[in-house]
Image (tube, rainbow, N blue to C red; front, side):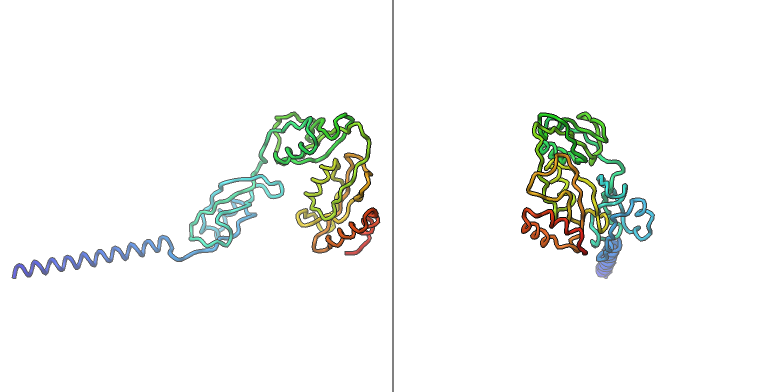
Length: 281
């Protein structure tokens, strides 16, 4: 009898421990699911264009945690604004997810001015592009070395190699005229973007002149439809001359058809280019 009673108590204790263990396990699983919000996700908004302080003050963004991990300099965007994020917009994440941000630097990165003197125009242009600088103007002076860099200027003043300068700054190259006084050809710029045209002009020893944006000043969506002086197979301008450009959107102008008309016109390009300004689009 005593032995049976002991066994009964043992079974009861085992049952109680089993129930307690199952209860603890269920509670742990429930708590874990609650803590991790198992199966519940939210969509990440697009934070680009916002400022970091704005994100911290907006109640609708309180479900995320933000961290700035990088900054870049971009003169076309507002300083301090967000330019990229990780995870990207519309990604599905859980609440309190870290969003890693890249913002526009408040101050541009500085670099040392390279030494371009005695280099050819083509080599100097390549180095300027590598350094993240740009050519603002080409000037020509009497010098035996044709199209070689005689001097380099920044904001109208001569700049010594090694001088700290903001990345993205414009440089003026002073080049030699050489011993020849011949005229040069104007390249065909029709159909090119602004960036492409500037590069072509500089490689041809020419400068960017007045610009006309007939559909706003968004330089990323327009191409050149007219230039002055006009393209010609003949050498008819001097080195350093300024070329005037007009821009139109692809949506409002058939560049392929116009370029075909230029090719068919051959030597009579002036009449084709002049007629374009009188047409209605």
